[in-house]
Length: 89
Image 1 (cartoon, rainbow, N blue to C red):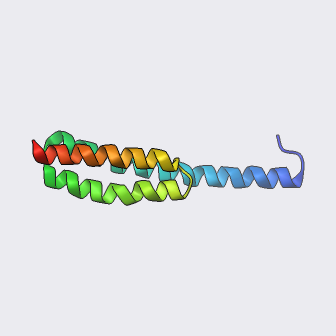
Image 2 (image 1 turned 135 degrees about the vertical axis):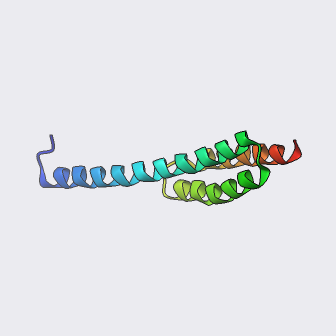
């Protein structure tokens, strides 16, 4: 357990930041799930709409440091190609 006042404050800050990051990560997962469901349903318009909303959410999470920049980029790229494939099929 933290003993010094600065360590106690740091522990409080970490707890607060962890809660915020958990919320952001959960939010990103929700948007990704919506895109996945739209892709699996085969509805191109729904998939495009869900992807259009999910993309900035992923970018925001990367900007805030919740996920790595390359991870966000990779997920956006792969989702984009899958959404395009739904339209082609």
